[in-house]
Length: 134
Image: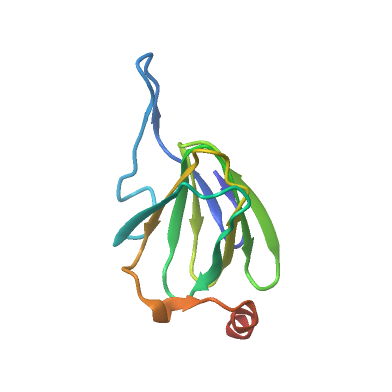
C-alpha cells in the first residue's frame, strides 16, 4: 500500500494459480459502497481522459489491461501515478483533480465510483477547481 496525502494505492488480494491469477474486490477493501462501474478502453494514442474533479464522489481506478498514467492534483501538490498491474488500484477521494493519459495499446481502465453519474458533481474547469479548493 502506498498512501499520499490525497490518494492511496491499494494492493488487491491476489490468488496465484498456474492456470491464471485471480484478484477480487470486496466491500472492506475500498472505503465506499460501489454505486457505479464503468471502464475506458480503445483510447486512441495520444488521447487524454479525465480532466476534472468531483465535489462529492470518490473513485477507485484499476488498469485491468495495459497501462496508463494518472496525474493527481489536490490544489497544492501534484503527483503522477502509473497504473499497470490489475491487482493494484488507485483510490481518488473527493476534491482531487485527475488527468489520465499515456494509454498503452489495448489498455482497459476500470472505475468503481461511490455515486451514480451527476453532472453537478463534476468540476471540469481547472480554475474553478482551484476556487473550489480555496
